[in-house]
Every structure is written in C-alpha cells, then in structure tokens.
Length: 465
Ligand code: SAH
Ligand code: CA
Image (cartoon, rainbow, N blue to C red; front, side, top):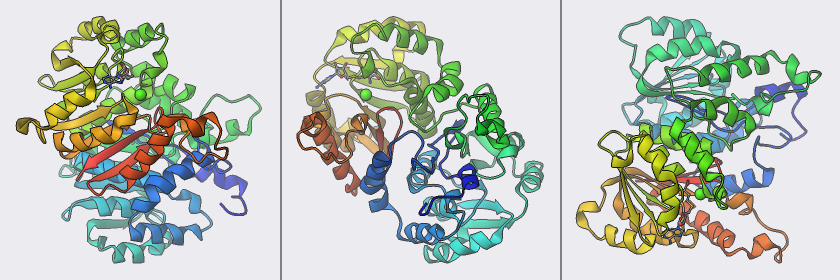
C-alpha cells in the first residue's frame, strides 16, 4: 500500500467474507487497512497471532505479491489463517477456488488439506499464478492443486452438470468475477455437499455496501450495487445458512443476522436489553457465527463458562443435534432464569445441563474425571477473564483433538493494542493487561492452532492438535 493505491484499485481489495451453510471476514479499506477495526488493532492481531504462525512459504509468497501492482487482490494473512483453521474444522478434502491471483488463499488451502486432498483452482490469468508457484512447490503441496486456466463461470457451469461432481465438494472459495456471484451460487449449490460451505469474498466491498448518500460515487460502482443485492439475496436464501466473519455493524446485523435470528433468540435478546449488564451478552452476529461454526464442527458435546441470560447458550443449544448436550456453568442462576422461558419455548432445554457453581473448581474437577477427558467437541469461555489461563490447561484435557476452545472478549474493546500512556485507564486495567499476556501465550502454545477473530469483542478460536 506504499505510495497509496490507485483510486480504482480500492474496488479490488483484499478482505473477505465467508458465507454458507456459508461464511464471512472483514474487507479492507485501503486508507484504514481494515474495514471495521482500527489500523492499530489489525496490526496487533497480525503481530500477535498471525505472523508468528504463518507458514514460511506463505510469508515468502505474500512478500513476493507485495511487489505486484494489484497486491490488494490477495486475501490478507489473517483471513488466510482463518480459512486454514476453518477447512480443518470442516474436515475438507475436496475444494474449489474461483480466482487464484498469486495464490495466497490457494497455498493456505493446499497446506491445510490432507495429503490426498485436492483443490481445483480456476483463473484466466496464469501469469499471476506463476508468481506464487515456486513457493507452492517449495511448500511441497503442488500435487494437491488442480490448476485450471480458464474463464471461471463456463468451467464451473460445465462441472456442475457432471453427475460425478455433484455434491462432491466440501468447500468453495469465490473470489473473482463479483458480478456473477449469483451465477456461481446456483452452480456451487450443486457441487458442494449438504453441510459444506461456500465462501464469498469481498462482500462488504470496503464497507461501501452500507446505505449511501444519493450523490456518493459508491452508488456509481456496479459491483457495490450488485453486492448489496447479492447480500440481501443470500440472507433470504433458504438453501443456506449464512454468517459473516466480521465485527458487526448496522448493515451486517440488519442484512444477514436479524432476518435469520431464531424467534426465541430475538425475544431473549430483547428481554436482556432491560438488564443493566446487557452488554455482557454476545452480540447477535457472534451468536450466528457460533451456530454455523458448531454445525461445521459437528459438535455434540460442549461446555460453556459464563451463561448470563443465555444468548450464546441458546444459540448453542439450537445448533446442537437432538441428542447433543451443553454443560453451562454460572455462579449466578438468577440471570439464567431471565432466559429460561425462551429456552423452554424454543424446545431445547433438554440439551442443557445448567450448573450453578463457581466455574473454575467445577471445570477443574471435571478435567480430572477420566471419562470426561477428550469428550468435548467445543468449549466457550466467557467469564472470569483473569483465570483464562487456568481454564485453558483444564479444557485442553476435556476437549478432543481437533476440537475447539473459544475465548471471548480477547480484544477487550480494542484496548489490547499497545498503550502510549502508562497512566491511562486502559493501561491500568488488570483484565486488559492479563488478556495481552494471555493472547501472547496462546499465540505461542504449540498444543493448539489459533485464530483471533474480530467478531463481537474478539473471539480466539483454539483448535487442539
Ligand atoms: N455468554 C453469555 C455472557 C456471559 S457474561 C452470553 O452470551 O449471554 C459472564 C457471566 O459469567 C455472568 O453471568 C457471571 O455471573 C458469570 N461468572 C463470572 N465469573 C464467574 C465464575 N468465576 N464462575 C462462574 N460464573 C462466573
Ligand atoms: Ca463475552
């Protein structure tokens, strides 16, 4: 971005969105580096948890791509890291990518797929792929790539008509030819299996998808206008569930979260608003993400620390199968009781094992029971922040290999970034200071893979390896 991108290039940015059973990430604003976060916060995430874990060849490919005038086309490294963790959770073997450019997302994908996995990657410009190819070769994953030099839509169209291909893909990443996203969608719904995911990148289009003044130049951008319609279309498409991987703003929440929010979640959320600590609830877009993620993970048995009125708990219970179980711990039963009528009305109380207890001693005891060890698919930790490190050790015993521990509020309203003034309230906030250390600790913990997502107040996904 040195020297400033040419004004047109802002319409080709990095960033992303995952959608279906479909997902989303945050688009980049060239001038802010990132859509919904400050530059300092993005820098913090990159320096703390992305760069230290970035594969050597990905790093080299990223650096080589920086010299290309269209370098903004590349997905940003934090999105590559998310893709990688997500593909593992999805257990993806066979994937398809539309729009390769120099291959950052492609290499991230190929590195993640199992030895016998395959990614079909389509781009009409092979010259950019050739920039990335030496790094792909050095990484030893070229054999997982089926590169197709072609106009993407006719290729995908033909593929979708071959019976042997239908329902055979676990994942699709669509990152080119935005004006045809609807056309890809129809075809990819044939190619991707039930429970698989189609991810559409750049669906926030640098944030320009929000309502604009009538004289704004954004309204003259056909891609922006198309994506506005496309996002609304996806939100209403009954064939998919959607989520957007980004800090929510009015647009995201109004377009793709509230219209799909379960009725009882909505009334629970509204009832919670009357509580003085209503800000403690996970926001609706995080609930939606959790729900899709739990399905992708195929979670059956989970644990939640910190229930409050139960927004994340009800999201979880709704996402679990009929015989699923969530053990939910809170030392204050009275807030749980605010949400309980809605949980009952939603018909999922039987999936909940509410434990009224201080969380740490309970989790500690549980982690010592042999039959509990390795039996959980997922843990959501959202209380008692100063003890996150203690929960971590115990949850690593309870969660199975390949399972996920999610820590909420790890960005602590953005205050985890370096503080200039050591006497500021932020710099003296013990929780903030603890989380700074905890984030650094997670980044260096070899027992897990991580992804610090800017959803809600920041949620760190840790995948046990
Ligand atoms: N996940 C909830 C919000 C949790 S807020 C939601 O999305 O709605 C944190 C909750 O943790 C509060 O209800 C508080 O009572 C509980 N809590 C805080 N410290 C705790 C501890 N040490 N043990 C058990 N519960 C605790
Ligand atoms: Ca929280």
